[in-house]
Amino acid sequence: MAAPLPSRCSFFVQKKNRFCKMVPGKGRSFCGEHATMEEGVGDSRRITCPLDPKHTVAQQNLEKHLKKCNSREKPRPVYYVENINAGRVDRDQELPEVSLAERSRADLESLVEKLKAAAEGLQQDMEDRTLSHPVLQEELSDPKNGGSAHKHLKQQASLLGHLQELGLLSRGRCFVEFGAGRGKLSHWIHRALQNPEGQGVTMETSQDLQLLLVERCSTRFKVDGKHQGSADPFERLRVDIQHLDLSKVPVLREKALPLVGVGKHLCGAATDLALRCLLDTAGARPDTQPLPKRLRGPEPGSGTGPVLGLAVALCCHHRCEWRHYVGQQFFLQRGLGPTEFSAFCRMSSWATCGPPANHSRAASQSGAANQSGAAEDHEEVERLAALSRFWSAAEREHLGRLCKLLIDSGRRDFLRTRGFSSRLIGYIDAEVTLENVLLTALPSS
Figure: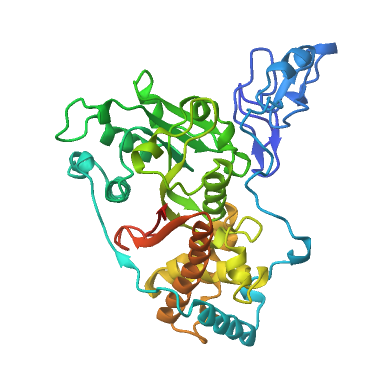
C-alpha cells in the first residue's frame, strides 16, 4: 500500500502489512495509539507513559498524568499481607517440572503404581447428591435462559441446597465468596435469605448479614452493583487470595460475624489459598461452645468471628502448585513429594478430557488454546495418540479421577488438622459439568 487511507493514521503496521485504520485527531497524522511517532515541537509531542508502555501522554502533561495514571502504584489496603497464604517455600523440594510428554513409558507406569498405592484405602465411591433451592426455581424454568446460563443456575441451585442441608444458609453470619467473579453465587445467597419461605420477621430474619466477595481481577457486569443501597451490604475485595488477611478486613472486625466460606469452581491452587486464608488468617479454631454462643462470636472490633463451615466446588486440579498445596504432609506421609504431585496434577486432566469422540476435536483446537496461554491444559489431549497405547480412554479417565481424589484427600487431611470434618460430594450431574465435586466442611465438635 503506497499511502494511508484518507483521514486515517499514517503508521504502517508491519504485522498486518497495511496502514493503521484509526482516525487521528484534527491536524494530526497519527492516532492516539501511535502518537509517539508525531514529530512535535518542544513539549507538545507525545511520549510513552513510563508506568505503562501501552499508552502515551503529552510530554508537557507528564507530571500531572503520573499522579492519576491507572498504572501507578496504589496504596495497599490494610488487609494486604504479602504471601500470607502462599505456604512455605522449601528450596530443597523445588525441582524443575517435567511434562508427561517428556516421560518414558516406564516412568509413567511407575507413577501409576505409586498413585494406586497412595489411593488405596481412600473412599472412592463418592456420593452423588444433586440438590436445589426454591429461590432459583423461577429462573430455572425461564425459557429465555440459554443452555450455558441454565447449567450455571443448576450448579448455583445445588450449592444453595447443600448450604441449606449443612445448616449454613442462615442470616447472622458473613458469607465469604472466594473467586467471586461477577458474584452470582453471593447474589443467590442474598436472595435466599432476604425473605425465607414461610417465615415472618423474626429475630432470625432480622439478624445481620454480610456478603464479602473476593476477586483479584476487575470484573465487568458485576451483580453486586444491583444491591447498592440494600440493607444487607455487599463488599468486594479486589485482592489475590494469596495476600488476603481476613483478620484485618475492617468490616469483619467491626461486625465480628461468624464466617462461611463458599466458592463455585475455585480454580486449582486458589482452593488451597482459600482454605489457608479462611482457616489460618481468620484465626479459625474448633469451638466446643453450643451453636447459639458460637454465633455471637467475639466482641466487635476484637477480631473475626469463628468459621462455621465451607462449601467449595472444586476445579482445575492441573493448575495446583506444590508451594501452595495445603496437603503436603499428607503426600509426604505416603512417600510422595513435589515430583509426584506435579505429575499427578497433570494426569488429573485425564478425568475431564471428555469422551474419545471429542479428543480429535480438542486436539485441533489446541493451537488456539496455546495462543491464549493455556497450552498445558491441552498437553494430555495432544499426547492422546501415544497414551492410547498404554491405557484405554476409560482407564485414563479412572486414573485422572484417582489423581483428583488423592489431591482432594490431602485437603481433607488439612481440614482435619484444623478441627473440621469434611466430605467430597458429586453435587451436580456430569452432563452439566465434568468438574462436579463439592468440598464441604463443618467443625468436628
